[in-house]
Image 1 (spheres, helix red, strand yellow):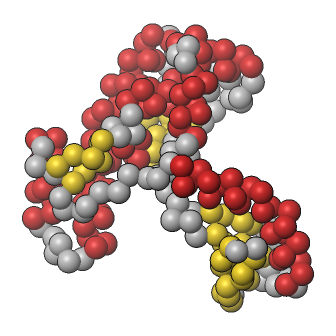
Image 2 (image 1 turned 90 degrees about the vertical axis):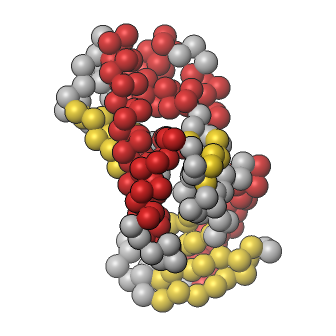
Length: 220
C-alpha cells in the first residue's frame, strides 16, 4: 500500500493505493479530508474519477461548512442532546469519576472515558424511548444493542434486533425519536418504500423535515 497527495482543481486529496482493492472509493471526512482509495491504477484513471465525482465532493464540503460539528473541550465539557454543557452537571458525575482514574494527558484514555459515559447514558435514555414507541406502534422487537458506528444512526435486522448508535445521545431529542420510530418501522417494512415512510409519518408527521435536519449532522 502507498499513500500520496494529489492537487486537483484547488483541492488537496489523499490518494491511497492498495492492490487488494477491487473497486475505487472516495470519502470526505468531517474535518474536510478528502481520500480516494484505488488499486494500483494510473494517474489518469484517478483524475478521471475525481472529475466525475467533483460535484459530489464539493457538495460534501459545503455541508461541512454549513453545518460545523459541535466541538467540546475534553475534561471540561460534554455534548448531550445537541447542547454543549459543563462537565460539572449532575448527569456527568460518572464521567468525572472515570476521568479521575486515568492519566488526563493520555488523549486515548480520555476518549475511552467519554465513549463509556455516552454508551451508558445512551442505554439509560434510549431503551425507554424504544419501549415507549414500541407500545404506541404495537410492534415487538427482540433485542436492543448499542454500538459506536461511523456511518449509521441505527439499524434493524430481520430477526427484530435494533442496533442504535451511542452517538445519538449527542443530538436533539426530536431527532432521536425519529431514529427510534424509523428503526421500529423496519420491523414491518425492511426497505424504504412508500409504505415504510407512511408508517413513520403516521407517528411523526414532520418526519421529512426531521430527516433533512438529521442528514445535515456529521458527527464523524
